[in-house]
Amino acid sequence: MEILWEDADLVAINKPAGLLVDSGGRGDDVVSRTSCFAFHRLDRETSGIVLLGRSRRYAREITALFEEKRIRKAYLAVVRGEWRDSKVDLEIEGRPAVTTFRRLALGHYAGDAASYIEALPKTGRTHQIRLHCAHVGHPILGDQKYGEGEVGHGHALHAHRLDFRHPATGATIQIRSEPWAWRETWLKNFDDVEFR
Image (cartoon, rainbow, N blue to C red):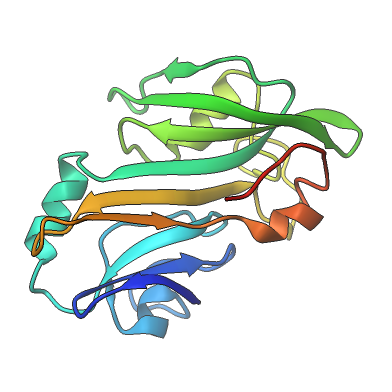
């Protein structure tokens, strides 16, 4: 797993699709591979940034940042159709859930129109982005649970950005990850996609 940022107490890694963050000691996962503990999770098929703790020194502070929504997260996704909605406000299991979206590019996948989008969740419900995309008729490509998944191909959702203030120094930490492999898969038929 690629290390995107690290210091003595924290490390951010680039999780590949198909790997669990923490299986609770039941098998191969990010936690067992790194001997760290996870502050948050991504779905097994979601790739991208995961922030881990190497020590417990700032565990309480980092956990509070996540709980109080003071860590800014952004995701990239490829969805079916031509995305037009900019905000989805839909409760999940009776709790408020809000995501704002921005379309980055239009293209095609398997002969159908598709959109490359950025998602910024304002809340942190389970499967929030996947559910919100499916709700407005633009399921994430490859999503077997909420769309029309292709077995063994994963889904096109990537944790792209994580920004937070370091509890020790007060410095703003900005971590980025681009889904480079998508150039040959989900984004193969998109002309105007730029990775930073």
